[in-house]
Length: 173
Image 1 (cartoon, rainbow, N blue to C red):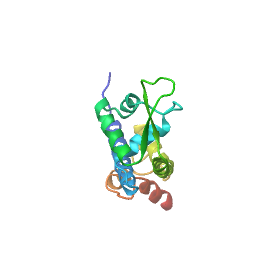
Image 2 (image 1 turned 90 degrees about the vertical axis):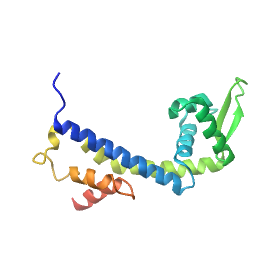
Image 3 (image 1 turned 90 degrees about the horizontal axis):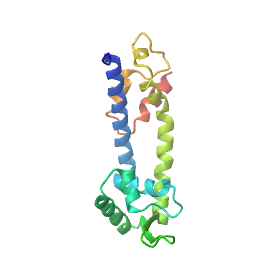
Image 4 (image 1 turned 30 degrees about the vertical axis):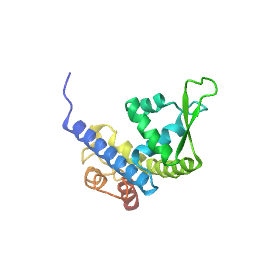
């Protein structure tokens, strides 16, 4: 099995850099609406969970990739902040379900709208980064693509969000 080419490693690096940039941007957005990044993830877990009564602590721990006791602590703090409530499952009294309060609902709606807009703006960048690495050579790049320098120089350091790389590129096209 042949090893990866330099272009493939470079593509993976650009993709990881873009992901870290998005994560930093997401954390900043959570803080701007008064949430910790963990609270944001918790609210998204509660809102996006498929069960009509809400997730259990075990469900939350699984979604967030944390241990049960860490999920309990996060739920405790979010409950104290008025973002979620615990309710006993009406079908199985052994289970406690987590639901959003009105405040939690407003916060996750604010953040989700921002995140969906951001992901829409990032789509061209992500397509570029996941393209066949051999097409990413300077000779093969079209003027419609974000350049490698845009990704590595701007996404990693931009406090306004990784979408600015795409926005700047599209504005100059």
